Image (cartoon, rainbow, N blue to C red; front, top):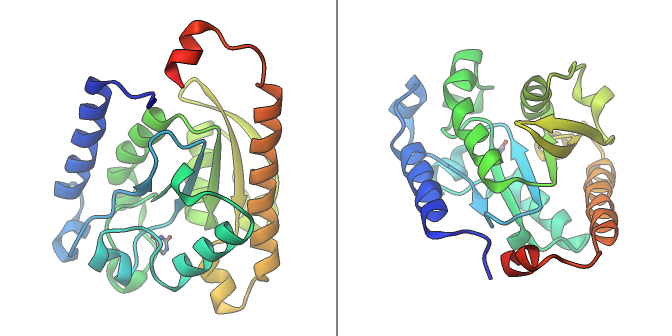
Length: 215
Ligand code: URA
């Protein structure tokens, strides 16, 4: 049984519609599609990238270009069920020429990602690359250094009153450019997988009737 009730479903649908119609920053002017995200709203794991690229802009889906194909391949190889993950980006519209989103664009778009996190309540957030890592650290009141220094570790954060583990890793496009070894990204994604499995073992205690019905 889904954990969503009808008004929660409306809330999510409204949020996605708002993102698709958003005009809060100039990025909407050149977009084909805004890219809200993809996956299960009951996901335990949320993966956050930087911003849509050309393929994502055309399809309206996150991580479907070269970087996404690599990411999804690694997720499959290590046995992650993609349907139990929610994949999104800090910024929902493509910056021209795939440049990094600027501060104003990130600030304008941030309420959407905040609302997505609060709605989904993931146990683990994997932040891919500097933009996503820096964004989530700022939200959690943590000091960001750089992706090379912060990656591959578990940060226990308090995000919007929820206990969420954050694992930063390299963006798959860094692997495609050849500046990062694919095995490093794989190792960090495996860390997230084993953390989730451990948490599930710890939580395998008798359920209350309420928790049972929520399942
Ligand atoms: N890069 C990102 O950060 N996000 C995407 O959706 C695609 C490429």
